[in-house]
Length: 265
Ligand code: NAD
Image 1: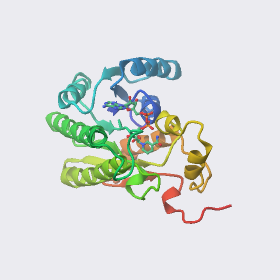
Image 2 (image 1 turned 90 degrees about the vertical axis):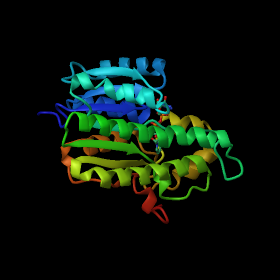
Image 3 (image 1 turned 135 degrees about the vertical axis):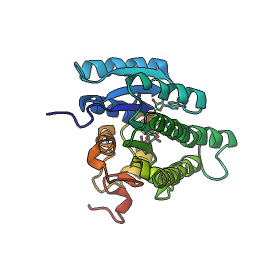
């Protein structure tokens, strides 16, 4: 069976953990070449070792790149790393944070608001911008840019995290507009909107606090958090030509959470 991403070059930010790492593994298995980007070299090296044990003899190439998505020059250099491969085809702007000091309107400190927006929004903008530059330079007529938002951009959370929620709303708006602007060039932009997951980002925050955990878990119709692999599978679909007419969507992968009023017993 030929892979669904054979011949495509993917860049994934936040690739050292969670969704980014799972997506790296799946995209490699589907035949893509992958640039794994993250702010942490140590985490990237550990992640690469895991990828190499799980994906034996991939058809595509794999390379790690240390990149802070808040620094435009670093994002530009990251995208340039795909040029010798023929330029980027799939840009997965996935790096993001939810800061423990985030809170309600009064609690959220100014610097945490700015940090959250720098990573979650500006990082996505820089990734989108430099992907478009490369796509135009290489005269590509087909590409997929996937920006990780969150289902909290669509529903209010009673456990406040105002900077995070607002930043993810900005990702939806930015992505939608880019999708419309670039549609005639063949560049698709979609937002991936995960529900709370079993990844370090959320699970480290919840820790052993059963009450905190229950407040979230109870809202899932299925009674469980999502898994990073379930987001990765959606990202592969959005990256592949199978989704060629899927554009400008807020692509929810939430187990039905945002559609539930009273959950089943
Ligand atoms: P994660 O913490 O496991 O992975 C995020 C990665 O981003 C980390 O490897 C981290 O080092 C990297 N990163 C942080 N700042 C960076 C920067 N400035 N430059 C480059 N890389 C940086 O989290 P995850 O759950 O895999 O989250 C991935 C995305 O999914 C994020 O955008 C997050 O907001 C979103 N999301 C997560 C959940 C969840 O419950 N985990 C839910 C909805 C949305």
